[in-house]
Image 1: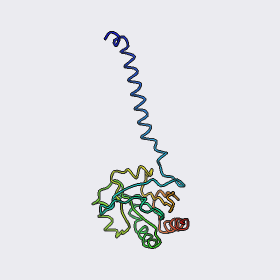
Image 2: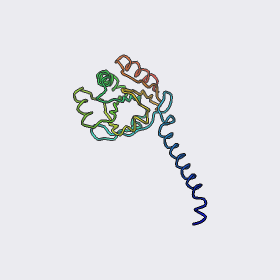
Image 3: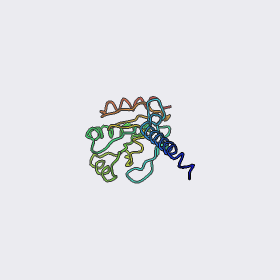
Image 4: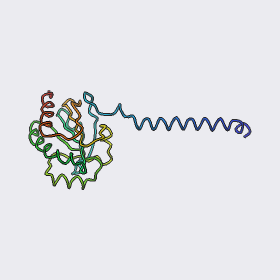
Length: 179
């Protein structure tokens, strides 16, 4: 006990320093996910989400096909506005094997389902209720759309609302790059 008393202050300083370093590292790690963030030319991060019917959908299920992943929410006016254009392009390109999928972020199944029914959207809608995939893709604004080549690399990321002509041009590029 006498020895501990003599070094008590140094032990407290050492423990406090270790906790500060560990806390700082934790904060830094939480804020810096640049190595995980999706970027054009890089690989599309894999995901597994459930659709409105409760079926698991994985990005790798569409391997070898061009994929368009649209991150959206019902409270986002531009997201709601671009849905009809996404639907038209889904109908146009479905026979060519192009996958268009909407990822509803942070909302309940009932909320997403209600809007999708009202908007007559028939392309797959996946639920990212916990916002894990949104974070994995580095999405901070809605709508955001990731165009993924058939080889699994990202062609482009569009932040903000798209019109039908932009979607068509971007999907055409994906199809042209497919083997």
